Length: 202
Ligand code: HEC
Ligand code: HEC
Image 1 (cartoon, helix red, strand yellow):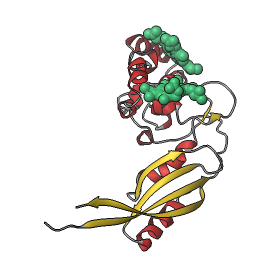
Image 2: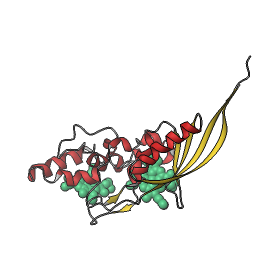
Image 3: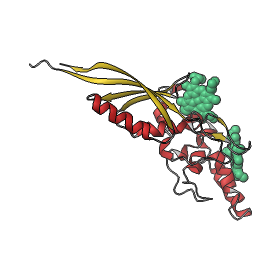
Image 4: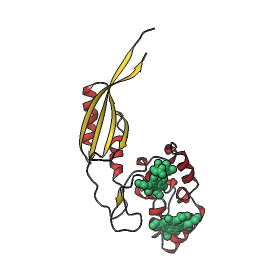
């Protein structure tokens, strides 16, 4: 049997993002930027609590849908977006909830007030009222979510906005990954710590 050791280049990248601007209304964020609740299963107890809560049913609850219909009928559809801002914030931010038409609402937006919606809120923005949230933290996630070199990403306390674990075949490959990340709008700068890690040993 051949003994082979595949050594890959790993890097820890500290990511610094611009602080977000305030929003008067909910920002535009695609629904793909929100992880479904099922992906939060490590927190099994919290997931069970949430699944049976009104937060999970905010947009699918028959009573809500009935009242939404009434509100829309009484106002020629003007009130629906106001209601949906709280009841399906992801559906409103992604543009999938169009007025009273909920037929294009994605599965994650149907989760109503879902884990990843609350957990990406950075603070309040705009005039306080209907879901006045600053959810720019998501910009960091969007910057790295489609980057194949990124193995994992964590938000951290301190100066950096996020800590990424990046895998690359060589330094050139690593530089290319970093270049792509730095090119994303909103990413201010990165600091890199390179480590050699054994990926597989046979
Ligand atoms: C500012 C946020 C917000 C807005 C805007 C909003 N809701 Fe709600 N709604 C809530 C919250 C929070 C609850 C409480 C859930 C609970 O505690 O059970 C709720 C509960 C409800 C319920 C009760 C659901 C049930 O089965 O118990 C209905 C019906 C409802 N809302 C309809 C509407 C309609 C219709 C509109 C628009 C006219 C609207 N909501 C706008 C936040 C909001
Ligand atoms: C309505 C908003 C909201 C929703 C929905 C929500 N969270 Fe949270 N979560 C919070 C807030 C607020 C805190 C407290 C943060 C703090 O104390 O700094 C918290 C704290 C936590 C914590 C750390 C403290 C603890 O109690 O263990 C975990 C883990 C967590 N949430 C996981 C989840 C998961 C998993 C889901 C979905 C199944 C979820 N959350 C849904 C708002 C939310």
